Image 1: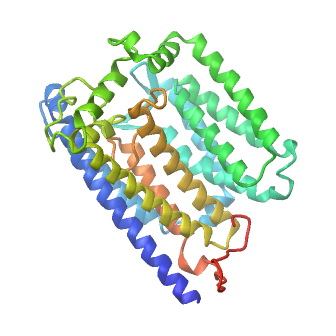
Image 2 (image 1 turned 30 degrees about the vertical axis):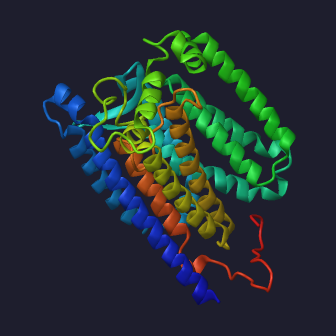
Image 3 (image 1 turned 90 degrees about the horizontal axis):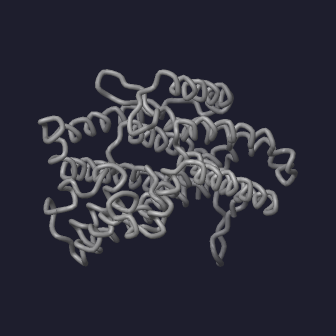
Length: 384
């Protein structure tokens, strides 16, 4: 039975890796297609973003294979130290970081930008999951969670100062989901949600540009040339795509109409060129990918590894839901790339590191024996 399970897991891991490679190559092609005119106008090189994305892809693959060699127990043992160093780098970023678009989120090295907050996906997730696992017997006591909320609050404060409110909201949402999965009391989670809503409301009302972004989301046509411009152009892309799309390379919105066409709104270009059929096909690929990752995660016998697998899956899931939701107009505009498809070096590299951590934590010999019976398949453990 173990050998059958291991063979099945290996097949699913192979499918995941090949699918991610295909998505990345498709994304690299879409980056070129959606950015070539903009790149030529700004750099005199139509393939500028394409070439950089391909370099990021190569670095991401190298990081993937290196991360496979990392001892997860070493990362778990030193999770606090790695997270602390990441937070120190984020604080330093506020002083010496590159300012672009009114925010300090990047270090600039040799023509490339590094976004340190992306590495929180690695180190905060490991720290948070390890913290929960060690205290799972007392997880229903609110006092048990206070240190975790302090760390999360300090981390969110740093990224809000950059400013990057969306990333702070993302991590609060991710942490709430993880605690919910570990059966934290709902009233405790509700209290945190209430505090978070109050904080977000204050941060929105105190900063006019955030308030305009919300009003632009609620009624984009009230200010079609400013706060509502990006959302309107995205919806135009969806409308022009129709059922089968305008055809590959025929997008009109990439012609300086839709801002961030190769980054945050690349799915809008996909919808315009490939239509609803192509968009749904991409969603189906993501769904199958998540389904196989879920099957692998639920079959793991080690509590920490199981938590890490579900944590990584949740990161990918939330990012895809938020990115596509923003481009559709379901959520307010948030600069969050589409995993493995949007342009962005730090994002792509970190996602390959996360994928490698998923593979590292799901090696077949670490999976439990699944008990079978004439009835439905059953799996013991907290994640049944």
